[in-house]
Length: 537
Image (cartoon, helix red, strand yellow):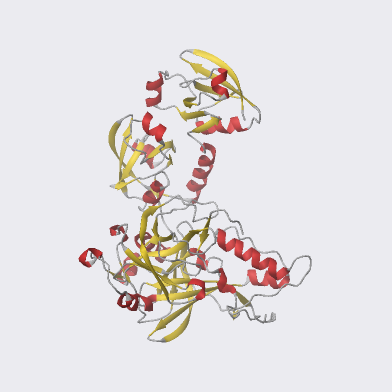
């Protein structure tokens, strides 16, 4: 396995070993309920921790309280197992988390053997050879995909887990243990959201031990937490640690197909391993504050850096899933970029927090609200924006039709702008992704040592560029670069790249990349027009 640092999703690929094959059962449509009825079934406790959350000598009482609500989730699939038995190619696994993909591919190769050599089949936890039942054409068989965890959030059987635990599953089972007895339930998927890795499933039962939910917005770095689940198929396991950080985003942990990811993780050093996915992260009172999701590790096992989805976000997604199985997100209509030290200096900002608007979509809520390219967004309805990846997470937490208030800085002046969000549709999302791909790298280096940005009113004023000039401006130049040696200067406006007019940094970068050796730049400088041929390596 690649030894470089990788994101290892804590899904229990080991769970495919030794689990029995199941017969297909007719899928029943999941009953839908309103968000109000869904919330009425939850047990919530938002009170502060006693004594400021000081350390106690034992958490046995806390574990006794939460453990009955933790379930082990088995997922089974018919397609992957059939392909392996019939010697077919492995199904497309690109939608699964990286660690899961690598494990399944390795297992598949072992079953097929190399150059026709028969390889040993999967082995149980103790290493015994597992007999492979023959396919019965009269009955559809399901093979085990893996094992994860979940937490019961209502006494009639609603369970929160991860999308990657149940993705591509043809059948799901949940194992519940109460008062020393174990019961196996068939679960139905109410809905799943790959963009946050949240899934809501349901089992048919009454009087089930529902967990108490807390308010994850009140968490503090340093708070003691417990992680529960079934690591390595070891059900009802508990590990203890603290909250290491809050609001982790832009990690690339959630990987979906053709869709953005909304990451806003609680980071913890409580041990999380394959199989913990979907289990609860609880505070020192046993109240659920998050859903265990991933680990950051070289080996795929716990390395003291684990991530959980905040329960507030998970419940927001679950609530949306209960009525129609889909998530409705607010749409603002901008593409943000991070603020680096150079940008902070140019915009006269106190620090590098916030996000700068690099694109405003036409006829979007942002355009209607008067937001402009170059505006720096500091907060959304009182929630501080730390970086560009943090902004979409916060905006998407609001519903379409809601009005949000944005604190911004425009050309050095603080302002407040209100925008009414619209619904983020697949059509809008497809257009945004195309624009994002077109604008990737803006602002950024068009050539080695040459940083460009879109022309904004502030930059026009700073570099004395008249309104009739169209192009992108050089805001940073390495004096040792080839461009500097050719005579290019900071403040030059690039109006054409390779004889084609440019209006945005994205266009300029795309055209420059088309030339492998030399890039032709037409430049405006204080009323003069110049032409430079600069090496592109």
